[in-house]
Amino acid sequence: MPHPDESTRLLQEGREGTPEHTEVPWWKKQSPWWAMAVLPLCTMAMGISVAPRIEVYTSLACLAHRPDFYEGTMATTWDTIKSVPPLCASDPEVMKVVAKLITAENTIVGVSSSLTTGLWSSLSDRTGRRSLFYIATFGALCGNAVFILVNYFGKYLPGRYWWLLLAPLLEGLFGGMAASVVAFASYVSDTTTEQTRSRTLSIKYGIHWTGISLGPLIGSLALRVTGDIVSLFYIAVALQATLLLYVKFIMLEPLSEERQGLARASWKLYRDEGKQAREGQGWLGKLWSSFLPIVRPLSVILPVKKRGSSPSSKPRRDWNLFLAVMSIALMYMAAGDLLYKFQYTAAVFGWTAEENGYFLSMLSASRGLYLMIILPLIIKLLKPPTREVEIRVESDVEPSGYRIIVQKLESPTFDLHLARISLSVEALLYVVMVLIPSPASLYLLGSLGACGTGFQPAIQSVILSLYMHQGGLEVGAVFGALGVLANVFGQVLSPVLYGSVYVATLAVFPGSIFVISMLVIASAIFILCLVRMPSHDESIAKHGTLAPDSELQVGVEACSTGILVDT
Image 1 (cartoon, one colour):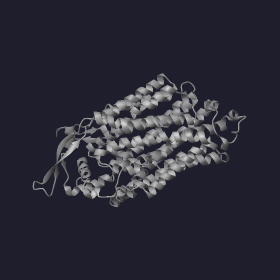
Image 2 (cartoon, one colour):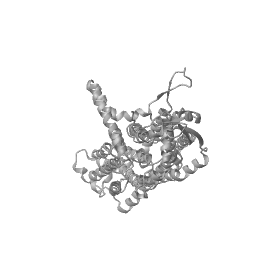
Image 3 (cartoon, one colour):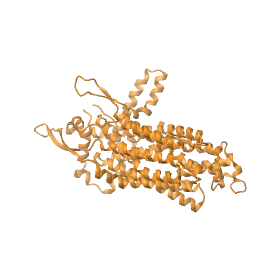
Image 4 (spheres, helix red, strand yellow):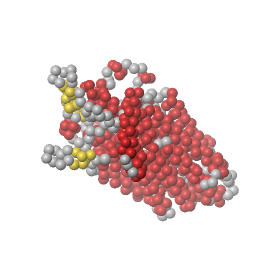
């Protein structure tokens, strides 16, 4: 059976408008909004707990290394900490300890989630998407619970504040934030068509940042009322528990039993073939084979050989997809500077968790507004009109043996230009922050930097377009590969880079983190300038003829589950 190509996928999606797909009550109808409606719960919980973690690190480091700052106050034991003295927050020894804790936290969650995200994502193909929501949310809940427990019982434990690193370990073992991202992205992919996917992704990112903006705002207000930093972790746990209940009793499962069964059969075949291959291998080969399920998602982004323009020309490798993925990987690394920004503001501007919370709310709200309203309007006004082409489909019922359908092709280069412009705007704002370090510059970076967030939906559209042009079918595997790269670059390499540079330069130039971010973004722009999108003519040549009608359904079901089936 030939594999269905992208045009086959689009044709099947067009069939979903028939009455058999629409005559369903709204509460039983598949929609991305079943997941997107609770996305704010997930992001609010994350936004509430980000800034307080830095203050908890600073508080416990101050008590352990500079208790003299607390002389004459009530804060003489861990369970009575309410705030951090400004002089202690800017103490070099305390700052180094906090930077080490941040680096260790990000490294632990990055390494552990890199090993598990792909496995949990693959499991969701076989057991349903809701299982991935359970796993990722439960891990985040456990992480916040650790901060609550260590705050009350840490003084009885050896190592004191180092027990806080149990939080990133538990989060990483359950997939970390990357698993949540993959869960929402997979749900959207399962319940949208190619025509609506990019718009839905933009709205999804807007809701994501809106939730993050509300989280710190709620946290800052709660902190003002309670005066207890630990209360914020209770709020985060309550939100995550609510999300678990929603997934259990309300959220619809987008994967049918047939698709899950197909995925289980494919996984069993893959596992049996692996066992047979390992029988004749030595211990080194068996060790490598055990890691294949972890690195398997990355194979979809590797350069593939492309036929030349003429039969006599040699095949050459197509690097466009790989380069586009590397550009987003670098931006995952640049996004890892957020925690160090909070430490920078505490040390240089004297900001507390409350003020950092307000800043994060402003930053996230501006991004949410841009992604939900401004960017879709820009795309609607500036994106070139679609081009209609005729595609021939093999048919068993037509006398001629085929029929013609009209398919709309989107502009293949608009999203690429949007991604480049978005990165350029963000790089320029970092230049301003380096040259004029001040709270006003930081707020300028946070507000106008929203224009740079158009990169994410644009580059994901570019990546999927390039992948489909190569004949790829495992869309879920692409999201899995991006999740692995987000862990490696964003939570392993990023904290090592920013943490080591910040610790080495904090005494003379704490703003070095902004220089690093500027250089990383500039590298991403350079790589993105090397990417070339296929032309309309190439796309038409690629998808000129489709599989027979009788083979469309099975092929699309196999494609939807992120697996390949050959018969």
